[in-house]
Length: 131
Image (cartoon, rainbow, N blue to C red; front, side, top):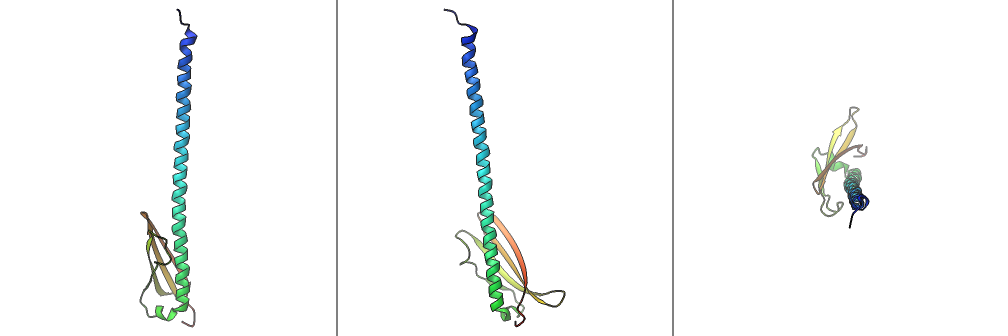
């Protein structure tokens, strides 16, 4: 029984097609998993940004209501436990400073940390004139 060259080449072509198809599928899976990981990282960063914005808004509300405590010159550290989701830690400090025009400003410094990611944000706003 003789084998023609065609019957020998056919399995080789099939093997090459299978290898190329597997390579394409695994490449697509690797690229998609990388994109999912990148999106997950962005979501975690956005969650920290949201927490920082909420903390700054809370500090601004507190400083409007307790401006007299800030005018003492000492930095005030506010608790963040009720504002932060589980597994997130942070600090929130308020300081009073004078602008170039002599206006009193509250400076807020927020530092948040979650899963090895750290976020530092600062904000300034004028204190109420009634103090």
